Amino acid sequence: MRIKLAASYGFCFGVKRAIKIAENTQNASTIGPLIHNNEEINRLRENFNVKTLHDISEAQGIERAIIRTHGIPKKDLETLKQSKVEVINATCPYVTKPQEICEKMSQEGYEIVIFGDADHPEVRGVESYAINGAYVVQSVSELEKIKFKCYKVAVVSQTTRKISEFLDITGYLQMRYKEVRVFNTICNATFENQDAARELAKEADVVIVIGGKNSSNTKQLHSICKEYCADSFLVESEKDLDPSWFNQKQLCGVTAGASTPDWIIEKIVGKISEIKV
Image 1 (cartoon, rainbow, N blue to C red):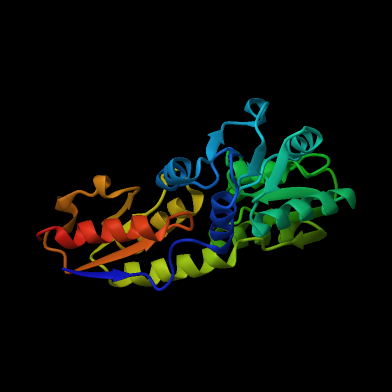
Image 2 (image 1 turned 90 degrees about the vertical axis):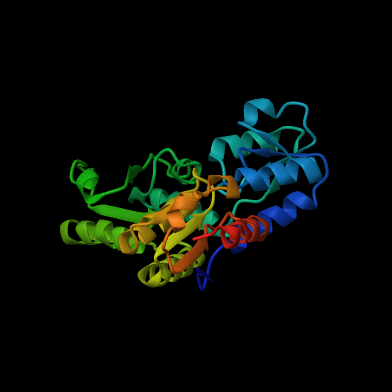
C-alpha cells in the first residue's frame, strides 16, 4: 500500500506562532487550551511547564497568562489586563481580524452575522466584540428565522469554515437586504488545506485525517474527504488506527488539521506503513 500526503496540511501560521510564544514563555498558563490538539498541549505542559486553565476564574495567583489562538471574550481580556497578571496575547491574527470587524461595523449601525459554531471559543470571542450582539448561524435555514431590525448587515466567518457554505449565507443575505457588507475572514491556510484534502480524497482508497476531534478545521477536512472517499477516518493518535481500514487498499491518503504538529503526523504515518494489507 502506498501512502501519499496532501499537498498542504498541518500547522498553520497562527498555530506555529502560538506554539513558539508558549515555548519561549516561562511559568505561563493558557486561558483555555492554546490549540485544539491534546497531544501537543501535553507536550507543552511536560516540556515547557505550560499549564492550561479552563477560564479566567482560575487565573488568580499566576504570573503570566497566554491568550489562546482562538481568542477569548473581550470582557475577559479586559479583566486580565486590569489584574496583576502579565498578559501575552497569542490570538491568531486571522482571528483578531473578525473581532475588529464586528466591533467597527456594529459601531456604524450594522447588524452582525457570524457564520460559524456558536459554541466554538473563536466564535464566542468574535461575538463579544459586537456592541449589540450578533446572530451566529451555520446554515441558510437558520438565517431564514431571523428578522433583522434594520437594512444594514455585516457578515464575517469563523476562520475554519467551508467557503461554499459561507457563499450560501452571503448570497441569501445579498438577495434580501439593501446593504450587506461581506468580509471573507476564512483563513488562507484553511483554503489550501481543504483544496489539497479534496484532491487527495478523489484518488485515495482510504484517507486518514489527523487532528484533534474537537478541532473545527480538522472536522471540516474530514467532512470534505468523506464527500470523495467514503473510507475517510479522523484520528488523534496512532492508537486510533484500525488495521481493518486498510484491507485491500492500494493508496492511503494522509492529511492533517492546522493544529496538528509534524511529530504526530510522522508517528501516525510510520504506524500506517507497518500495517500489513
